Amino acid sequence: MSLRALIEIRLLPAILVAAIVIILPLFFPSAYYYRVGVLVFIFALAVVGLNLLMGFAGQVSLGHAGFLGIGAYSVAIGPMHFGAPSWLSLFAGAILSGVIAFLVGRPILRLKGHYLAVATLGLGLLVAIVLTNEAGWTGGPDGMSVPRLVLFDWNVRGADAWYWIAGTTFVGGFVLALNLMDSSTGRALQAIHDSEIGALVLGIDVARKKLTIFIISAMYASVAGSYLALFNGYITPDAAGFLRSIELVAMVVLGGMGSVVGSLVGAMVLVVLPQVLTIFHEYEQALLGLIVMVFMIFLRRGIVPSIVAAFAGRHK
Image (cartoon, rainbow, N blue to C red):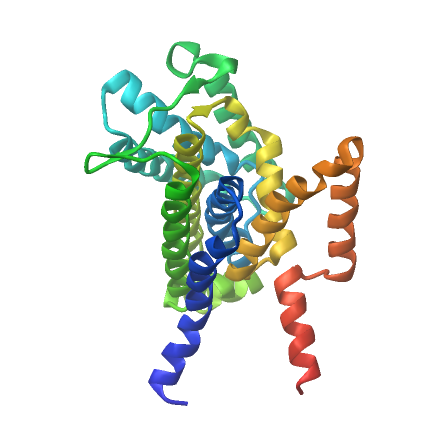
């Protein structure tokens, strides 16, 4: 196969995702659908980062919403307490998340299995507690308002504007994730996922690779959190809560661990389904749980990997 053909195959998922972002608004009958689309792309961005950590490197994180909360509060605290513009606060939040991931990741990534899961859970709970108790900075349990994003004298407002910002950012994050997985680092992460001992034998610096992907994953979540806060115009400590972390993990598993496309599908299912099921009122949560159970029973590898495997099996 020629180099050009290989490049085209590698870029095909990114082209399809970009096409979805562009075409979807043609079928939106109202601004409400733009809002749902924004939420899908914001959470999908965070899930892509978490999928890099869990699906490719095999490292479980149950406190990833902590980085989401750091990013969210950075765009609230920066403008309010330091007079920094929102876009600069967004980058500052991503850098802060990366630094915290670096400092915390060095000791906790030495752990494995449920020990690692509990350690990351503790990290997420710690961030949520700090955001709740530091009322002078964060507004406490009631949260705080978030100034609108201003870019080159453009005051960003409206779900339609945010749709294109969130969609474009997600496509960029999607392409970066694909390139990372096709790089030597991506291949090293897959080796670590299969066997850390085998990776060490091959000369891979396991500790360094795991720390690197943990930092990248944290920065993905931070940017997503900043977007969520700027879009809603308000933020509370719930953004960094345990239930939010579990929701992110559920999106990864539902869409398919190790599938970058699955990150979008998982986020889409868990963002869109609750909106659809509101017509059932008090049965909404029960039906959502039942549908997710059915997906996992019949599509055990996740939606995207299971469908791809079934399609490949038919064409052998």
